[in-house]
Image (cartoon, rainbow, N blue to C red; front, top):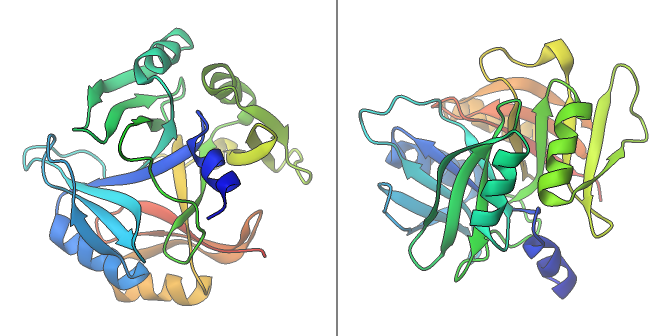
Length: 261
């Protein structure tokens, strides 16, 4: 990883971590270990059992287990870096968002909050201390892109601009049928907003989508099915490369992508 890549990852407003809360931790670990080659290390357990997924010595994601009496939807959560979780949480509220959890300390690793934007998309805040988050090395099995899927880019894009300082740039191929903006920080793309209008899934609503790099999108999508998951949108060419949308056995939706080189 270059020094420039590390600096981008720590810039406030940059996606820096992804995590998943599930009902069955062991079976979920097995699914992603088989799909991506992940191994696991114990993580902080303030909120229950939690592991950090590790690939080639680098932490890439977190997986936690919900209490048995919690019946919440299972979904990947994107965390955005901040230098001050408390101040950013206040900004979220002031700009029409909601802070559902925290900010609170995650041991010595950092300070965390769970928020939602004005249209309901959930995201996290991460103020790093001993844990900086995912290292952006782009290998297969690592998160390489995060995209907000929402009704339209015009309204919610302003929220992220005000809270995190993102500069939104309309995609070169955007049209009435393709509403897509890339969010930039310090001149570099860090995430995107995809407005899908009435095509937004009714069972999910606005949400952040995590893209995991794979060597072969078609083969990885087929493997998801073999492991008990399902294909939501089959492999196709997209803005980032050949991609597919899939769900794990508990229903957590994520994207597979073979990035363009």
